[in-house]
Image (cartoon, rainbow, N blue to C red; front, side, top):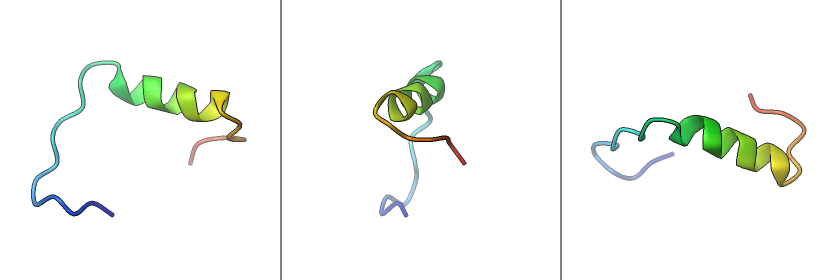
Length: 31
């Protein structure tokens, strides 16, 4: 859930960086 009326666009590479970070911190996978 996001409380902002408009979400900012992610910078190039930000999404994959976030996914890799979650896996590195112990997530079994990303849905």
